[in-house]
Image (cartoon, rainbow, N blue to C red; front, top):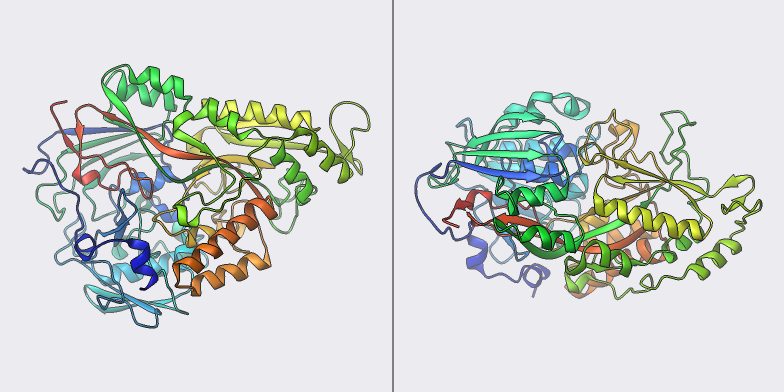
Length: 572
């Protein structure tokens, strides 16, 4: 049995079905307005120019991929007729090519047909070396995309690709309209404001007004392929604020129908849910709250062309013993207790799910402040003047710790700062508005990819159920830098030759058991051996759903809004 069949675990009937069961059929736009609130506001509607989840989700209402992972983690077609496999003739026997067939009659919202040329254009757009594509790892080993006919494209790989479902699969890798983005390739990509703010899509909604870091107004796409969808004539997408306010807007006041990523203390969530106009919903997947450790020097004293780049290694965080001591000082169980409760699980893994890929690594679970102090002593860091901060060679063990503005994250920051202070590390806390922190503005000093701090905390995850592209983000050379307009996926500038070699091996491996072994090894290099990032909590996706909203299928493997076309109004 080939790897694909093992992984997807889906019948051919599942693969051939692209939509969820819809509770009520009727005319498009019959339910007036849908109100969605994300407490992190999108800054752009092009996921190829931002690694932020808020940009991915917001754009998924307009832009569509060939296929998605559904709420069970199984691949289902979206713009494609079916999921190609060796068995159905969609993949070559040698696994070096996959052929996708577009559904007949699919059009863009302007009424023009979605064609294979659009798919090829999108690949070329992301693979342009001057474009700084935030989703470039999805196109690793792609040799070219060949147009067979108007509805058929073949993706050719440089070598056998046991898991070929990365390009154009998932909300982060949708199809762009070639006609609209023709003049927006390479270095010009970020400057195309009209295109990036108002993309023409094939999805259920059309943008009528986009206000970066604020709100989006959309209307039903009159050219959407299902005449009964979407049920809502209009969609109001509000961004900004905080998670508590968003939760209240759904579960206490009923002003909104859906709220995303309810990052708050469990007792607060429970109290808000008693409001009676909505309910919290949960789903565990691969989402991990983590601390990324900057392997480069973010000092403002450096020239802008080398600051926070591999040209300037960090003066002390490149010492593994310092990173390990920082990890040993953290009580992950207490963090989860105050921050997530049943909606979280302490973890030492970057890849916590699905179970077959999850390492049995538990060494970070026990806090040990004394051992952390001893490790820093061994590394030569001493509190020479008695002020509580360790020094070495005239350099103080002093760091800037940044994250987005959020009550839970600020609670985490305060606790972690105290623990690090106890082992002799001086910590300056910085919190940044989430819309800015997770934004894609190359001119901003406060985005998480630019990483003008020593450590930063946020959550991240991968699309679908295979972590290959996610792990490939940390390949040497994948880091954000001035030449890519600070776009890139290797956020903490990690680089390890063995890691890259194992990535290459993973890309050639088809047996699920061997892939699982390699994934666990890659995970352990990052989390246990190098300590270049510190996993904290495997977070469940937590959202709020209004009592009068139906059709929601919370999806921990893709966008929360992956099936927004199927949402509808109920009687409550």
